[in-house]
Picture 1 (cartoon, rainbow, N blue to C red):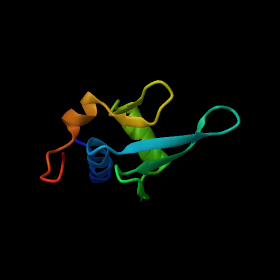
Picture 2 (picture 1 turned 180 degrees about the vertical axis):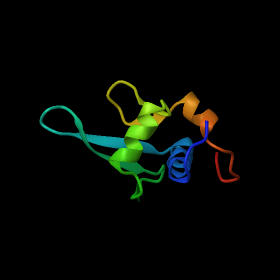
Picture 3 (picture 1 turned 90 degrees about the vertical axis):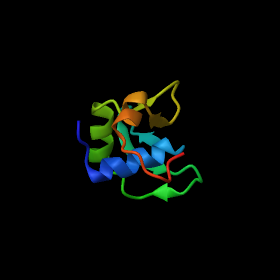
Picture 4 (picture 1 turned 60 degrees about the vertical axis):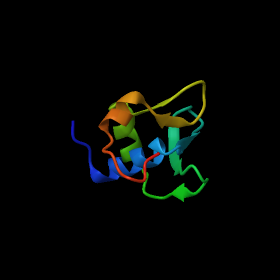
Length: 85
């Protein structure tokens, strides 16, 4: 399955140890998502459409109420780059 360039960028950050933190609204639905690198820097290119697309494809998942991280499926979809650890 091919994924877009913006999805690749997010998955690379997550594969290197990044995380996606969410904020919920009053109804308990996800209102906002923010992607952070492993160093704690905010990555501004993540929007709700991209977040939902990654979640629908099961490339990211949250465990125990924690931040969203990359899954094994997401690791399989991301293309190898020299800077991935």
